[in-house]
Figure (spheres, rainbow, N blue to C red):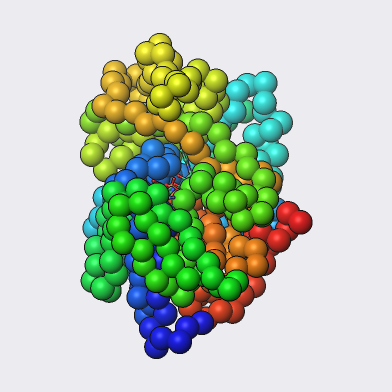
Length: 373
Ligand SMILES: Cc1cc2nc3c(=O)[nH]c(=O)nc-3n(C[C@H](O)[C@H](O)[C@H](O)COP(=O)(O)OP(=O)(O)OC[C@H]3O[C@@H](n4cnc5c(N)ncnc54)[C@H](O)[C@@H]3O)c2cc1C
């Protein structure tokens, strides 16, 4: 891919996808510059529930990809057993009483795919899943997925950036906007608002919800279903909860600092975008979400918000990742995905492979930009 013995690659975007890709590239021998607008984790990766799963009715190829993604986390977990930011303590999901059929359909899908899935009664939940109030479980029960987990993305990003420094990569934060400059149909350099331009052989654009905009500037359409989402982090609280909970009105999981991470789709309609680009959510919405979380937990503990983050949640229009070479410019790659917490390690590994070798990896075939033509 290069006239140089060591390929020179810039990765734009300091979220989990950019950082994981930079890590895998540097580990494979590339000279890497990781450039991001603000601080690491300042985008969606800093306000993610980060439930590691393949629970829903995905396409066959996407389910397989997610399962391989989970396997990479298990390897990391085996190598870093003492850390407190990656856990495989299971996931518990339930539906409202009127949606018993939907719950059974999910359970049947999971069983058919060999995804470990158990239908538990409220009594069994009380015995097997610590911290959950069995009174919250409806008559049809709840699905227990012991193989699921969660990751604290800012901690994972810290871990990977330390490794990156060890590989000699250059990390450029608070750089302002970076953009790609091509010459003769090939990537030539990246220009950076608050830094000198860098000449490179390849660029990976991993700018989260910004990817479709960049593609549009190059005449390539990537359908975009990005939404706005909020994540609350609570103050430390004694709950006994270890699993990820997905209930009809709230999703939550423990966090390394002893608090909880909490979100719910319904809060999106309560969020206002102000003229100055900041977001506003009523205090009652935060109170209501925390009350829903408390109701799911043993003893209904008082929960208070330590912080919350609101912003775009990148989602491709057809719900599947968009990965690999973009359009006709040689050396230009993109990564745009939802479920980026689950997928981060495998995406970084396989994009790193493609950029270094110039070969297309078969697992990425269904996720190419060209599918939208
Ligand atoms: C509330 C919420 C809940 C979620 N829950 C889950 C879940 O349970 N499971 C799961 O798997 N996933 C979940 N996700 C999704 C997951 O968090 C995201 O898919 C992932 O974090 C996206 O990472 P990213 O690196 O693509 O983007 P981001 O984290 O947004 O990073 C992009 C970075 O690029 C920088 N940037 C942008 N433009 C430029 C530019 N021109 N120049 C330089 N830098 C630039 C930004 O500043 C940002 O730091 C959730 C997300 C949210 C918001």
